[in-house]
Length: 191
Image 1 (cartoon, rainbow, N blue to C red):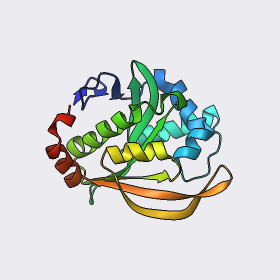
Image 2: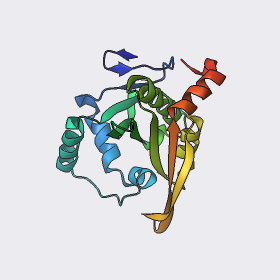
Image 3: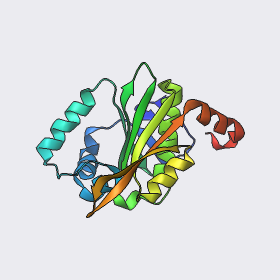
């Protein structure tokens, strides 16, 4: 539930999703311009962004009517961003995107943030499904998505050029009905 500019959908005090502020520009720019981050999360070829290009892209994203973006805050520090984008109002679905600074990975922060965003998507946005794409070698992200209930829906073979080799892109999705069933089976998981 919203608390000021914070979305709290779990009792996790360590990880919250909140609206971006001007104070987050540095960490968001760092994520947007870090080649390692892009190579791990995006099937498109990464390109370093100048500060001006980043600011222009951020303004476009912020003005998009159907783009919901949060800063991931862990223990009081902005460590990443997570978003819902490419909403389809008729079919009631959207794509999920997440990026964490390197030092925040492998600590369960992404897993918690994904769970919170999924609940926001289904409860607040009334979506029927959420989906994402992930590079096959990003095992940590895949584990986090599976913990949130995402399942493999498809594979684009040798679709991305990453670190000198072709990689498959995995398409994963989660239906609201699957998410609701999992919550009913494990009610103590919910915050």
